[in-house]
Image 1 (cartoon, rainbow over the protein chains, first blue to last red):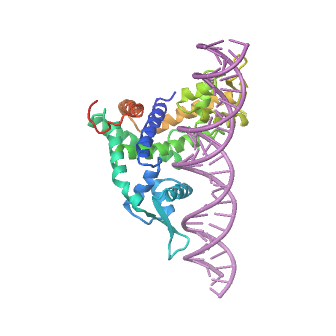
Image 2 (spheres, each protein chain N blue to C red):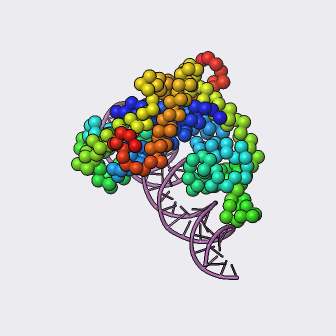
Image 3 (cartoon, helix red, strand yellow):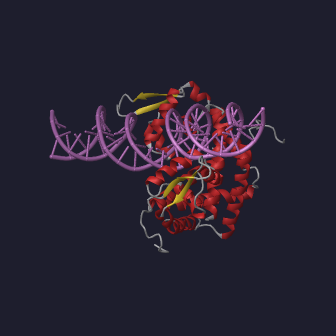
Length: 151
Length: 151
DNA sequence: TTTCATTCGTTAACCGGTACACGATTTAGG
DNA sequence: CCTAAATCGTGTACCGGTTAACGAATGAAA
């Protein structure tokens, strides 16, 4: 019933599918491009750091990193000073994907927002920001006064 | 880098988290509410029908239905006329969730769009519709003339 | 009537995401 | 110094999603 939730769900699914096919053209799975993006900005980060930057959990990064290491996109190495830490280093193959993947992502953004005017695009970004704030606030407030109007 | 894709990703994640906690209050997992919604409209559908209605694959519905049957929300029964078909029937427990879940979903929509004016909300829905259309068109056109301007 | 193609649901394997428990390593306190 | 607490990566188990393969049942054509 709720209009926004419903529409967002459908749009999100379609967008996800488009992003997946785009990234698969380069042998990546959806989400791995985000992990790579973090490492492109700076190499040798720990799984925990990457997880925090991507707003995902650490086990998720570990699993993705394992698969990507098998795929030859990155390598693991333990930190010499602190032996608990593991640092993720890009291989040449992983580094070589930066340009094509970023281009692919720019292209997707462009194609998907092609029917929007500049004003519409700005309004959209503004609305999404507001919703993001509201949803985040909702998650951070486990207080169940969900029916009361004001705090 | 792309503004919309980036912002949408973050917002979507926050929204998903909020929806999950909302639905978990009633013992459901995210996505199961959609399956139930289809059955609330009409009982006794087949997994394939439900999958088509939800825009997901059939195995997904089968797995979810299995878990929900264990949870006592629905039951499977084979069709008498066509023994290939399986029909999903709501239990009383599954039917009892309709009011609370729909209320929860309405509340979430309300809370999440609380900071938007009516005009903003309309512009948002319009923009999402356009993006949904573009993304869907992108998926349905495996033609790789992605760099050419016009068809 | 008897094949043969179609249409189902199911299973298995994979990926992204989560929470939870575990083991190893640092670090801080006594 | 040595023990206890905090930190970090990993393994396991689960859920939602996908694709590919399989088996059973139906329906149509020969």
